[in-house]
Image (cartoon, rainbow, N blue to C red; front, side, top):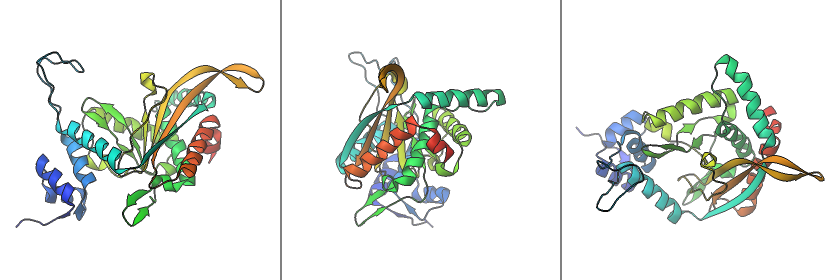
Length: 291
C-alpha cells in the first residue's frame, strides 16, 4: 500500500525529476506535508558532483563541456526564483570594525589554550545579527499570499562555498547561544558541508542568511535573497583605511555591509534601521555581547 503524502505541485515535480520518494522523505523528516524546501534540501544533501574528464575547475577549452549537476540546477533555479518572485532592494553601508577585530583577537587568545574552536568573523556576525533581528523581527518574516509569518526563533543560515556548490547550513536558536557555542556549531556545520555530510534538516529552517566574500578581497556586493527568507546580509573584506577619528586622521579597520531585502515584506526605512543597528553593533560590540 502506497502512503499518500500531502505535497505542493512544485515539490512533487522536483521530487519526480530527482527520483525522491516523497513518502520516505516525509517519514525521515517527521512531517505530514512535503514542500519545495524539503525536496531542495534532500537534493542538496545527496547530490554528487559530476565533472567532465580532463576538465579542470573553471577551465573549459574549445570542444569540452562541464556537465550541469542536479545541485547546480537547484542553485540556478533558486537564484532565478528569488530574482523573479521577490522585490529585491540592496542597501550598503560601511562600519568601523576596529573594535570587532580587537574582540576577535581577544577571543582567539582566550579560546586557544583551552583547545576551543576559534571564533570567526562569521560567528561574530551571526551573534550580532541575532541581536539586531530581535529588535527588528520583520526581517525574519516570510511572504505568504494572505499574511506575513514572523519567526519565533532566530535560525541563521550561513552561506558556505563547497566543491558541490553553495550550501547554507543553519545555526539554530542563535539568540540563546554563546559565542563559544556558535563557534563550535558553525565549525562542525562547515566541516560537514565540505564533506557532503549535511542532512536535509541542517539545510532547512533558516530565517535570515549571512554570506561573507571578504576572504576573496570583495568590498561590497549585491547578495541574492535565500527564499523563502526575506533578507540576507553580505559582508565584505575587513581592510585598514585612513579614517577621521575626532579631528585626527588614523588607520581604522573598515568593512562594507550589504543588506538585500524583499520590499514586499519590509519597507526601506525599517530595513535601513536594521542595517544601521548592525553597523552600530560592529562598531561597539560590547553593546550586544553584554546583552
